[in-house]
Amino acid sequence: MISLLNAAQFNKNAPILYAVVAIILAVVVAQAVFFLVRAYRRGIRIGMSKAVLNKTMLRAAVFTVAPGVAILVGIVALSQKLGIPLPWLRLSVIGSFSYETIAANIFEGNVTTADIYVTVSLVMTCGMLVSMFLPLITGKKIQRGLMYIRQRDKKWGEIFMNALFLGMISAFLGYVFGGVGEGGSGWIPVLVFFVSAIVMALCGLLLKVTKWRWINDYALPLCIIIGMISAVPITMLLG
Image (cartoon, rainbow, N blue to C red; front, side, top):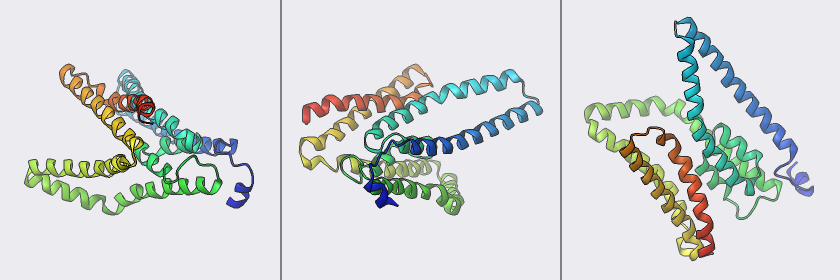
């Protein structure tokens, strides 16, 4: 099957791919609408006013704009290599921009053949499936262990959680700094990383000074956008 696709003109933006992705996302949206309607009706039955429910829905819709911007930026960033349908599907359902970027870069250059496209898709899908099913097996045990640590010593419980988070971040730092020895181009992701980190630090400082809670929701997409913009002059400077 793949060889036949390779023999023909492979198109990572083929209409059939858009159709498949649209059907999948339509099912996901239908599920969201189904549970939204049921939750709204349930709220009415237990005595909640329509004004409160409508206000809650409106505020939730507004705060989804920030994650939506981050998703849109991720789709644009990956579209050159993978086309639009695959990043659109992955980042709209269960994907992560940082993870998808690593999976997309397992092959150098753009994806031009069906076998490379399928390989990248499988890496993205199979790797992410672990995060779906592993919590069913180990989730309760991990949660009980964390609760036990927090109950014995709250301070050490917080330190342990921060250590887990930093360990996860370290895995991506290796990807950022891995090309430093390759010359000027190897410093491009490092400098972009520092620009994004500075923007995030400024957002945190602004939040602390102004107490504007909406900054929490818009800090990430702002860092992504400014980081991508900074990559242009940095690349022109370092080549």
